[in-house]
Image (cartoon, rainbow over all chains, first blue to last red; front, side, top):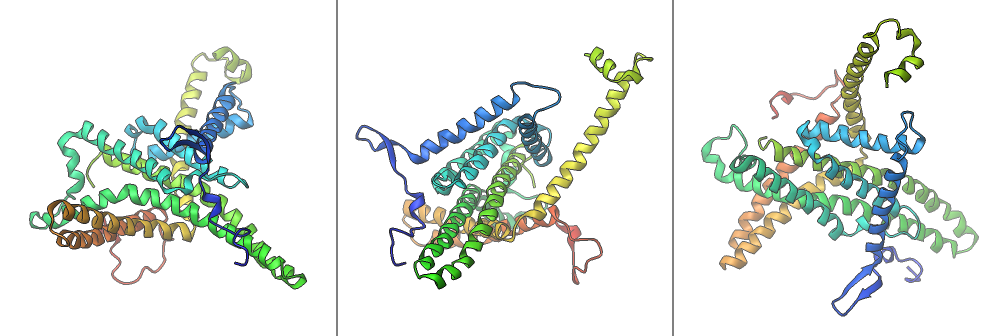
Length: 251
Length: 131
C-alpha cells in the first residue's frame, strides 16, 4: 500500500494503555475497558429488562427471556438435566462472547475476542471446570474418558496417548477458532475498506472501480454479524458438550 | 392467583378443578413442544453454519491437536534430554489425535444436519456403526 498510515488493517488490534499503575507494567488498557463495558452492558440490560417481571413481557424482557431459553435449551440438549447446574456458567460465557463480538462490529470499538489470550483464558476456564468437576464427581472413573469402550487391550497403549492429546487440544481449538474467526473477519473487512480509499485516490475511474470493494465491504459486514453470533453459539455449544463429558465420562 | 385467571377465562369457572387441569395439560403440551423446538433450532443452526465456519472448526480441531502433541513432546524432551525423539513420536500422536478430532467434529455436524432421506450416499455407506 502506498500510505501505510492510511490503510493498516492490523492497527485496530493495538493495545493502548489508558491508566498505568506503577512501574510493573500493569495498566488498564483499551481491551480491559471494553471487557468492563461488555460486562456492564450485559448486566445493565439483563437487570433492567427483567426488573418489571411482567407476565406479558415487554420487548426487552422478551429478548432476555429468549436468550435465557436459547441457552437453557442448548445446555439441556447437550449436557442433560444435570448439566443445568452449569447453566449460569455457560450463559455468562455465551453472553460475554456474544456482546464482545457485537461490540467489535461498532466502528472505532475495540474487539476483545480478537486477542488469543482473551479467548484462551475463557477456554482454559472451561477446560479446568471440566477437569475439576469431572474428577470431583466421578473420581477415578473420570479417566475412562481416555479409554474408549470396546477397544482391545493391546491397542490401548496407542489409543490412550492419542485420546489424551485430543483432550488437551480442546482449549487450543476452542480459543483458536473464536480468535481466528474474529481476527480474520476484521482484517478482511479493513482490507476491503482500505481498497476503497486506495482506489478512490485514482480519480473518477478509481471511484467507479471502488464500487466493487464497497459492495464487498457491505456484504462482509453482514457476514461478520452472522459470524459474531455464530461463534458465540459454537463456543457455548462446545462448552456444554465438554461439560457433558465431565458428567458422563465415557464415549 | 386463580382469581385473576378465572376473571380472564370465564368459561372455566363452573368446575373447580378444571382450571388447574387445563393448566396442567397446557404445561405438558408446552414441555413437549420445547423438546421439538429445541431439536428444530439445533438442526437449523447447524445448517446455517457457513462454509467458512465449518472449515475453521475442522481446521482448528486438526491443527490444535498437532500443536499440542508436538508441544508435549518438546517439553518432555527438554525435561528428559532425549531431543528430538519424544517430540517426533508425540507429533505423530498429535496427527492421529487431529484426525480423531476431525472425524468426531464431522460426525457431530452430520448428525446435526442429516442428509435428506433418499439421497444417494454412495456405496459402502455404513452410518449405523459409528459410535
